[in-house]
Picture 1 (cartoon, rainbow, N blue to C red):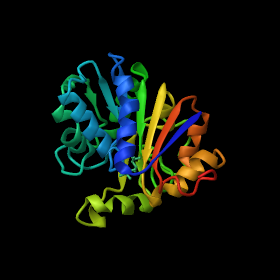
Picture 2: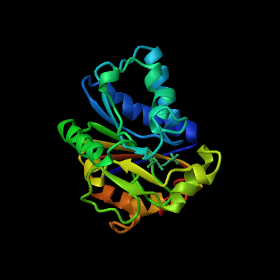
Picture 3: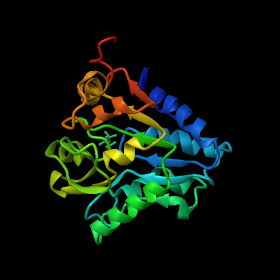
Picture 4: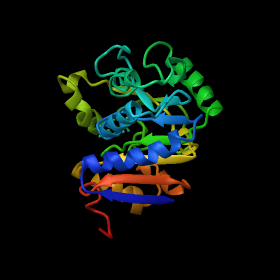
Length: 241
Ligand code: F6R
């Protein structure tokens, strides 16, 4: 079931998303599924600010959705670096409680180990962005709704969307390791953030389209508790807007 909150702009979206996040973090010993990308950056800013004002992440376990394959952890564009730069290094979360899949080494082993950890620590809240092609995590169109942690070839649309973070399109990795749809759906609550016209079609399909593996986000229609926080532009194609 969706609760959709349409906000004036990116800042208001980030603040609203923070309110949802804060209510979960305040419960104490919680497990958060975390996302990277430009959509949650503002939310992390609010989470860091709240820490300065006393909010603690000491009892939080975190599990990130995904990582590029082939980028060392200390690469400027790895999701590991993203998480430390935008969130982890600014707050009191314990290093031992931080988990990201590793995009190097024996990926099959990494996937199996990450899946085992996720099964042991179901997420209280899973934070999601959404791809312009409807991906969640890096579950690209066509991914099975039964998928668990796996390696995926990124679609060209996704590589192009993400080229803005790299010096050139050539440098964007072709593969990523990601939680599967099944892992995401296990979360007690899901918080999805999106902004901008580029996401409007995916948001429309997620909320109003047919549930189909060709549009991975549509599976969220089957989840009991999804809070969707978007700006006006991402909401611009919705029927009642
Ligand atoms: C990131 C992730 C992706 C992004 C999506 C949107 O960990 O799993 O699904 O959420 O590609 O990215 P942005 O927010 O940069 O538009």
